[in-house]
Image 1 (cartoon, rainbow, N blue to C red):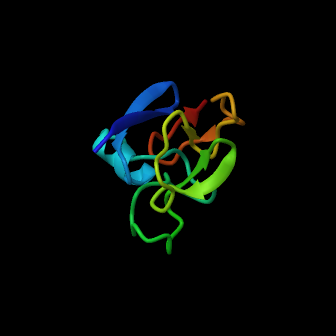
Image 2 (cartoon, helix red, strand yellow):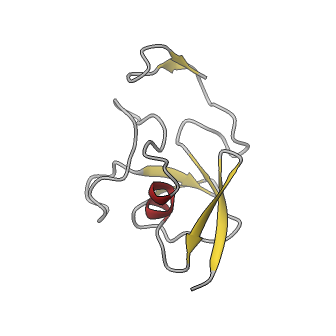
Length: 101
């Protein structure tokens, strides 16, 4: 299988052909995919798109990371970042208990 990378907040994340974005992020040790829209962090959970707990932005489009195939040179970001990787806003982070920029 061919190995390639996509970008996650300035970090190259390797993946195998046919692997999902969630699987590649998980394999890279990234268990949080950023703050969720309601409460808590988004993460890899059900693996079938039912819970929508793994929503990320892929090349500007919101996708379920567990269903979206990883593709070379894609820009994958948390929902709270814009297309340039900058935070959209600052808000209290439920895990850290502080402010997340």
